[in-house]
Image 1: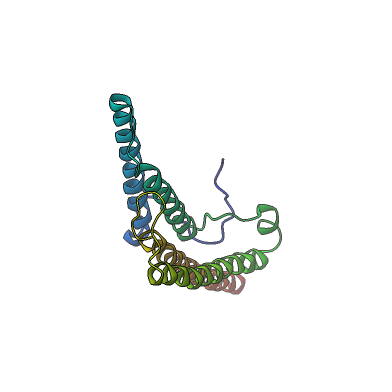
Image 2 (image 1 turned 135 degrees about the vertical axis):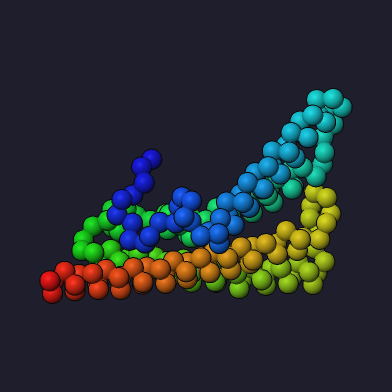
Length: 181
């Protein structure tokens, strides 16, 4: 799959990438390593004892969900989230910029809403002392990460929206300078 060359926001990749955008990369590495270690340990135990760790499936599912949320945050931070290329790559530069900003504002609004609603789920898990079905730990240990990650995605989307605005201002100034020259 090739990278889109028409992206309206500056890409944050390579060694010049700010440290704040590397958080998701390190979290991805850590989560993937934990998933690999847990799965490998379970395979070894099953091979040598004909039994398995009961907790591995529950922890693995939690880590995969967390991985998806961290990857979503990374995609938003780098302006690589899903969009309909047919619509976003057509038309004038102003239209492309408007659609890009509308997209990042929509992502911010959606994940702010998810954060608020999932905070209620965490509160209910804590208040009613729900336990996980597999190993019986408090369910809020797992559910608390959804509002936290949703807020992180919201912050990334707001940051992208601001960067897109600065880029639009920079392009407008550059166009004015070219026209006056």
